[in-house]
Structures are given as C-alpha cells and as structure tokens.
Image (tube, rainbow, N blue to C red):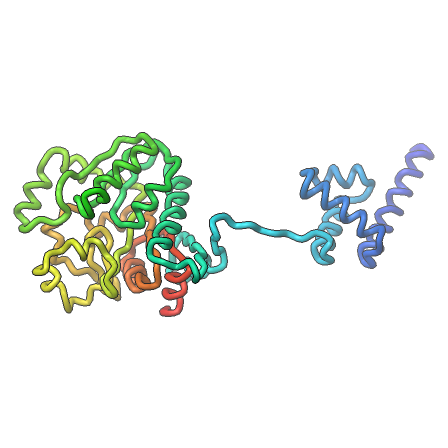
Length: 335
C-alpha cells in the first residue's frame, strides 16, 4: 500500500475517533458537524453513506450525530396535521372501539354548533372517502345531514358505481336520492338510485316495490358494495332524520324499546342488539349486508350521538369512524 494511502487511512481513523469524542462532549465543532449532517440528511435528502464518504467519517458516526442532534435540540421536528386532526385522540378512540381507523377533528369549543360539526366532520369524511375509494370498488351511500355536507365538500372521487343504500328520506331538496346523485357526479361513476320511499305502510307494498326492475338492480348490488359511507342517527337524545320521518303511530309503537340509534333504518339498542319492527316495510340495506362491507365508514358528530356510535360498534358495524372531539371524548368517558 502506498504511503499516501496509509496516510489517508490514518487521518480517516483519527477523524472518526475525534468525532466520537466530540459527540460525547458536543462542543462547537461537533455541533457544527451535526448541523451540517442534519441539513444534508433531512433537507437535501442525501443518504448516510454518501454523507459519510464526503465527510470522511463512518456511517455509524453519521447516525450517532443525527441522534445526538435530536437529543441536544440542534434539530427539532414539528408535525403539522391537516384539518385540525387530533392524532392522539384518534388513536385512543380507535383502540377503545376496536376499529381499523378513527379520524377525530378538533373543533374549538367556541365554534361548536350543530351545523359547524356537520360541515367539518363532513369535510373530513369526504377526504377519507376520496383516499379510500378506487375504480375497482362499489360505493354504497346511506343518508344523513352530515353525509350531505360530505358530498358538498367532495372534489375528487375514483370512477366507480355508486349505490343508494336506503330509499328516499329527507326534505324535497336535501334527500338520499340527491345525495347519491351528487356523489356520483364527482367521480362520474354510474349511480344506482332508489326512486322509492324508505318506509312503506305495509310489508306487501315494500315487497312489490323491491320487485321493480330499477329497484331490484340497485338492491342486487348491496352484496357487492366494498366501501360504504353511512351516518349514525341518534334516538336518545333524538337527532335522526329517519326518526323525524316516522309517523306518530310508528314512534309510539317503537317507544320504550330501548332504541338509542340507527344506521340506514337499522334500529340499535345500547348493547348492539337490533329492533326489527320496520325491517319488512323498509326499502334499505339489511344489517347483515352492512356488516359484510369491507370498509364501512361511520360518520357522526356531536356528543349527543355517543351512545348511538357505541351501539353501532357493539353491533359489529363500522371499520372507520370520522367524528369530532366532543363525540370522541363522550364515547371514551363512557367506556
């Protein structure tokens, strides 16, 4: 080996030994070296190997100085989460309810109102839906005012079939049929609407409507839905358009049955058991079909819906929950 090569190796060893001792002391020289490495690694995107070669030190020393830079505060990290998303509370809620994913939006107490919650949670649900759905999916859409806010915020969606999972419910201008039209228009996927009421007077009337060709075509796709977005309605305390749409006779019949919430007209008790009195009269997806959906996104906001959300998860419904801090806290406090 030439004298120059030997000198190079000797100098390199000395530099590495010096880095080790400087790292322990973290004097000005080591701090400057650590800052240089941090800039090259975190900002310029250079690899540890390349940095080590350029600076004449080992890759181990580069890694050690990066760690020390964090320990000594030479470099700090600020993680910005979009949309006032609360990652810690989201993870706590996910674990508490046994879900695959939870998204909690942090809305300041001073801004809390029913409409603000619907708008912000709906916007977050739209973002989750847009990143979840692919062209290979069949998308099912339920009904609820927060889902209407979701549809209004959607800017992009993969092109796929969009299936209405419940018959018409809601107001003249804001209903489940219009909701499916809005969602399908964003992704330009084929809609499968249900031009029939959600609830009929008799089981026979419902059965006859289910046999109509367009209704049958939409309901046949219930088994093929891979991604669903549904709102959770509360019955105790009341915050459900399905409940509001019932006749006085139906509400009287169902009173005292322990119903705390509903999803797509599936009525739920606290323990997750179901009340099936409306099932034969409804043109809607069944609870067993909801359970079989691979990715079922529950959308709900407001502490008053905490019992309904808990009942839904106890019933085996939902893989993802999009909600706000007030509901998340209410759910966790009750666990």
